[in-house]
Image 1 (cartoon, rainbow, N blue to C red):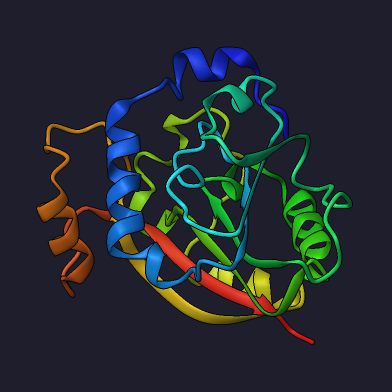
Image 2 (image 1 turned 120 degrees about the vertical axis):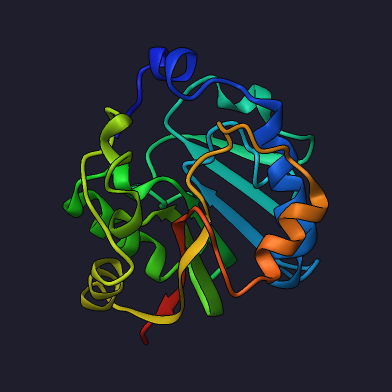
Length: 214
């Protein structure tokens, strides 16, 4: 799916709070998932808020928005294109693939195409991590974003991954709040405590980790 430039000037505008949140998420969570010698792929990277924080041997970002490369940190490889076409990658070359708030924008056939294309790009221990709204908890706000086309809960996305050749390793139904657009301060201490807490007030985004079934 190709989002128009207007989407990034109206709905998904640059926000310093978003980068601050991702710095904390890297420091307190994702750095434990990604080794320094990894190859990391960010699918639908947007402003590069995730991939810019990553410390890894190779960092690759793909998005259909032509303007996104100018937001990337030095050293991040930029691919302007659709996530459904990953033919530019070498087989079994990716250690960690990440998709944040992507698949709710795609049709089910497009999502399936991404999974199929990624299947043989992930290496033997490679993992796909998905972060996105969980409709079960975000149903009131889900379609406030006019580009959302497909509904997933933490149950349906697990089934979808399974029928498309992936083994689900972890599901966190409530991982993060839905958006940074709130009155709450972006505090590293609060974010660290939230990630560590078994209670997730306002948790409306799910996290799912899966690997190709071989």
